Length: 457
Image (cartoon, rainbow, N blue to C red; front, top):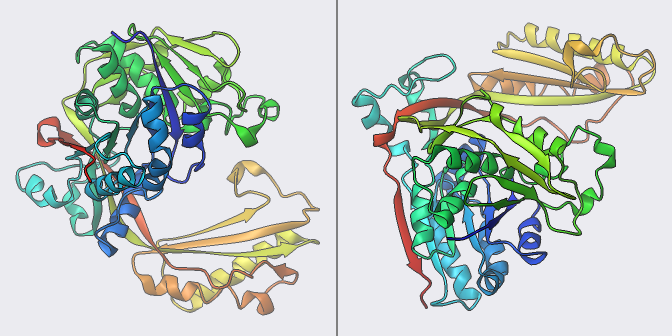
């Protein structure tokens, strides 16, 4: 049995540092490179891209990245697990095979692709068979918005990734795998954990949660003593040193910036946590209240003591749907009386919209530089603010009123309060609103598929 496993995170979201995964592979020893690209809104963006071009719908940065590091992966015996496949795993797989050929690795690399999470084409049938896919927030059945659904993906777990690794895959690419499984699936494979070994799997879940957001676990976006975090320009990304028993160490490559200590790791643990006693994944439940952290040397934190529980009978489904249109307009007002000018401009704009008979679901105003971050907690504005940005956003079910709103911002430059600037960006752009619909579905309705291919000429 493998006695330890170093699982490095190279991407915490689609848009993260392009050089981070390269540095994880080249700046020190690792066994697995984990790349997490997906968020709920990302799925709808990818679905739109695929609708415009059937060859798209996956994280396009992933393929050229792999082409660059494929020789390193083979030389250093590093495996890659990623959810970069988005809503078009097949196209991503083809891109990876071509990238391996371009890197001269014909016959030397196996690429695995995991499918089965995409439920978009199955929604009518699922609803017809009694699956209401109720919104977890308000209980509405999905049928209420079915005609406006853009994407629907079940969060699948570690089983197909474990199988792919067992079949010798150098790279495993999935669609909407749960983020944490990208880390704990290699643990299950390497250590031979039983699927009902809830305590060990719970440790893997916590490791995955710490690992999934990249440098947020090594001092990035850190509140505690943030000014003392060293060398953020060269911040190291997290590495999980896993053991067969379950407890693990969080660390990073030596010589990189950032910091790994219990305070930093705690911040990541409470990020997007939900119920701390029931952090649910497709493969088990972890009790975050039992986590124990201890310093284990410079830039090393040991994590232990995690209690676990059985997996649930349902899987979470992430659904996005079209929910109207929005636009955001901004103007900057200068001292003196910057806030008073911006307030008056907001009043003038709202009265003009009323006179035009325009109806919106919501009009929201923020004064950036005074209350945009803290809202009502900001207190009264200081009397001497040098400048403030007026930011007005509208949302409506139909496009027409939002379009007209975008034409009413610019006139304030000459027909509103004085001292205005900051309109160089031009007329605001109308954007379609994509809303999130979380739901549950019986586990038996989701059957992951797996394809493992050797790169051929």
